[in-house]
Length: 123
Image (tube, rainbow, N blue to C red; front, side, top):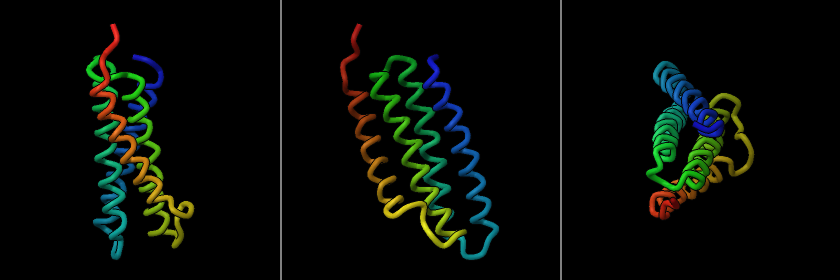
């Protein structure tokens, strides 16, 4: 397994832990509705990162494009969840248009994963 794949697996673990923390916070705090969406975003995309890395490592998808998609999942989910979390606790966002930027990057990453699956494997 290459170094990038290992880093992505570690980041997926951190994303999953953060997702559980935000889910607990949304369940135990009054008026924490934004944290539920951030939690779901992190948990879902942590699983997507793990699956994408596994598919790339097994040669079922184009590895470079697949790992690029997984990296996009990590960055985009951080933008999206970070923006929603800051809005909940600090009253301001990560940066202007952070959540829409994260959402757009998520769409691009999912499309990159589709390309990675369709790309012919070179032997």
